[in-house]
Image (tube, rainbow, N blue to C red; front, side):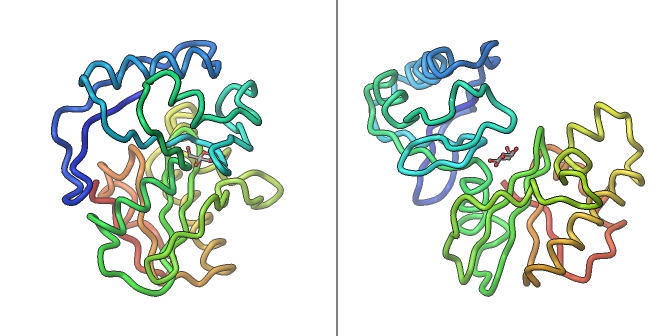
Length: 216
Ligand code: BGC
């Protein structure tokens, strides 16, 4: 669980991020307490934006693919507000990453349909049409050959299964080709841990859509 103060006009972080290992089990109470610790670390009293790996509707978590099922139906805004005593906004993590890229990173000034894909523990997606976010797309869960995409092509799968970059790039390519067939986006932005090692897999992709690594 990581946090940092950010200048929302420039997108720049105002201090090094502060990170606390996620409590296990990551129940709503344990996570909210940790979020409170992160915010207190900076002595922060202003608004707080939280990104969660789940569908978030009116502050409530609606899915829990890679987090404790105890989160289902919980109002994260209320929990984090109580823990931080700050005004809180909660959105999906990939939507937050995409929003940042569209404003300050690889998607700046890009029109048409842009899909941000985060390859991490799972696969997150954010869809933008002329810069406007269509929230809560869960395209990491589409099925390819009867298997959930994130179970084949997330970065965690590359690490856990010890896949070569070549093999993993092929899986990512298959995934992006599927999205290409259904959505015909103008641009893919790839984020997540592997975006730092983009030279290992981006050149291997055959998908006709332009693909760029996330900048943030
Ligand atoms: C979740 C998404 C999330 C993504 C990346 C998926 O398993 O369903 O909500 O954006 O992981 O964390």
